[in-house]
Image 1 (cartoon, rainbow, N blue to C red):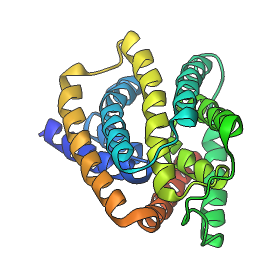
Image 2: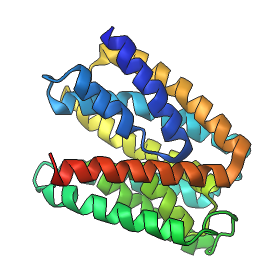
Image 3: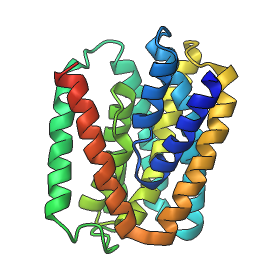
Length: 252
C-alpha cells in the first residue's frame, strides 16, 4: 500500500514537473506523509532518484518537437551540474533558514509580474544571440543549479521564469530548456545523496517508472496546447508553491 500511494504521487509529480516544474511539491510531501519517521535526507534522495528520470524523458520528448538552441543550452546544463554540486557542498557548511523565509516573497513577485505582463512568454522571440545568449544561459544554470543543490523548492519554475523574462523565450520553449537544465541539477543532487547512502533503491525503480509515465502525459499536453497552456499551469504551480513555502516559513 505504501508503494502504491507514493507511486501515484510520483505519476502526478512527473505530470506537473514535465509541464512547468514543481513536481517536488507533490512527491516530497507524499513521501514525508507515508514515511514520517524516516530521515529527511533519505526521502529527498529517493525523490531525486525518481524525478531525474521524469525530467530526462520530458527533455527528450521536448527536444523532438521544439527547436532547442543546443549551443547555449548544453553549456548551461553543464553549468547547472557544477552549480548543483557547489550548492550541495554549501548546504553542509552554511545555514539555509534565511532562504526559507525569502522564498515565498520572491515567488509572490514572480507571480505578480507574470500576471501583470499578460503578453510575457506568449511569443518566442529570443533577445540574445551567439556567445551572449550562451553566457547568460550558463549564468542562469549556475545560479539555479546552486539554488537547487542548496535549497531546491521551485527550481523548475524559476528556470522557466528566467528563460522567459531574461532570454525572451515563450513558455513552451522555456519549459523545454528548463527540463534539460533541471535534469543536470537533479543529477548533482542524486549523486550526492547516493554517495551518502540516502536513496531507497528498493523504491527508486517503481517511483521512476511512475514519474516517467506522468512526465510523458504532461509533455504531450504541453506540446499539444502550447505556450498559453504552459503559462496557465505555471501560474497555478507558482501559486501552490507560495502557499506551501509560506506555510513552512511562517506558520509551521
